[in-house]
Image (cartoon, rainbow, N blue to C red; front, side, top):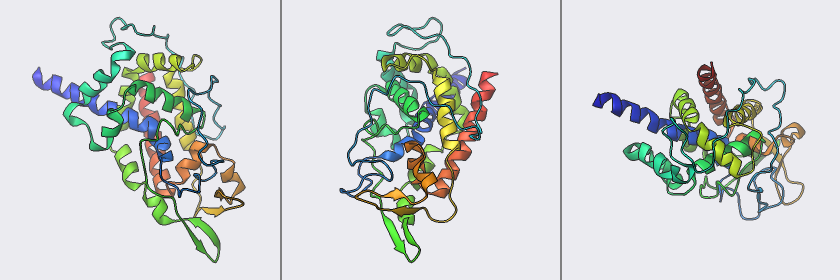
Length: 283
């Protein structure tokens, strides 16, 4: 019995971290300090422009027809704020930070310490999911993470994002993808009532956590992976993608592109596996 309880706790603990990292995967990449002081992230607009939070009260945009996505399930019934749901074993949202930290315990990966030290952990996941589903990057929510400085290289063929700039994300991407997708899916299902409550508190009443998760996955899968280097131009102060189709992508997709083709491909493989795990749970 003791061994079974330990195994159950370990699975749940890893699932907590997986869900947070998967939810934040592409959106952690908008970290503070990754561009020179006089530059904004590629295609992001005015330097220092903040993404509005709480998020706009609008449903996530539908994914493109070729985004390899699945129809989301019916939204579960909302949970009354501050009240423990009968039979769920979950605490009220206001007490959920302790719940998350206790489940992680000694199994907490060092890379997650900054996040776990903050308050409102489930609320954080809700903000990430809502922004990602709409294709936005919640810069303020992710401002405590730094990936280094953005850089370019110039050749006879033009100006490109440097390989070193892509490489800044290798360790972060590997850490985010280190946990099994089925555990991430299990955690998202476990915390669904609390995430639903947190979404309501930020003004999102017309989309369930599962709906937002499927939409966020679709954004990742719909991101193109250009062959060769990613060409840039600098019409004014800020860099833009030279390819008009790339420049027209959603902010979260542009941010994913900045991790480089190899990291984008890793994220897409993981997104497909997570989607498959969620579909198995939804049967």
